[in-house]
Length: 334
Image 1 (cartoon, one colour):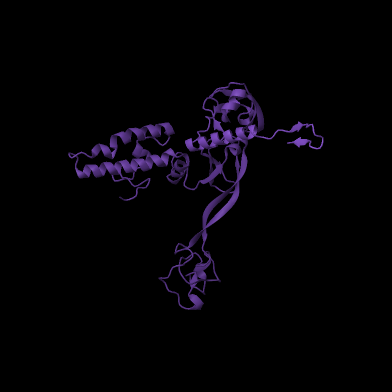
Image 2 (image 1 turned 90 degrees about the horizontal axis):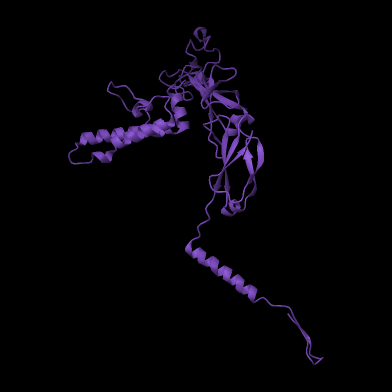
């Protein structure tokens, strides 16, 4: 079966359908809406529903193709980074193909930062003087003065070793295009707390950078308050039972939180003014880890070790002092 891409399906008018069209959602659909749409379509078009003897082969093939295309579309749109690249490539949701992707960490996005952007652009191929033809570039003219050059007579290139040029030969460096890829490097000032996929103008260019905040393993934004963040503090069962002071990482450094003895899994502690820009709070969720599972053979091994230690303690020699009547036979036993 041929591999499907994100844009290989056509509608009844012969036009290519976007991933959003395939799933029947708008380009501004949320991740939850995309998952719901895919789930409903999967129930309707799953190939297992069309394997009965009454189903003709063409219908089975059409259903299998439909299911494959919607699965590809779902995997593209359900992943935030893949969706961003897809939107940029297809100029959807206010993005442009020329936009440059800038990745920032959660902390970088909260505090703001400076990033370097590599802006691609085309420049004239120096090997063929922008003609795309093989041979050697004429050293006596440029793209602007080529028309009046008496060395290459407007061709921009000469044959190898000054000989006759083969008109059918193309430049190996630019593959006959006449231009090669180059990069313009400049700074991008990432503002504090930018929106996901926010566009920021690159200094010195008409190009924009798209800011993508990578998911954090430690911090999560709260939906109820845009300045609140959530983190998780993992404790063992013994630590949760005994309680105490524990160190917690915040957006602004290390803080200490007190956990009462007997704290249960799911309890929350609030660190005031430790959220985004110190305008919100940091909500610390307590996760009580289950005790480690010991395999049966390892459990037996641990029991034997404990028993051996107990026996060794019982059999440990004791320092004894004794006296005998015969003064010539006296001593100490240890």
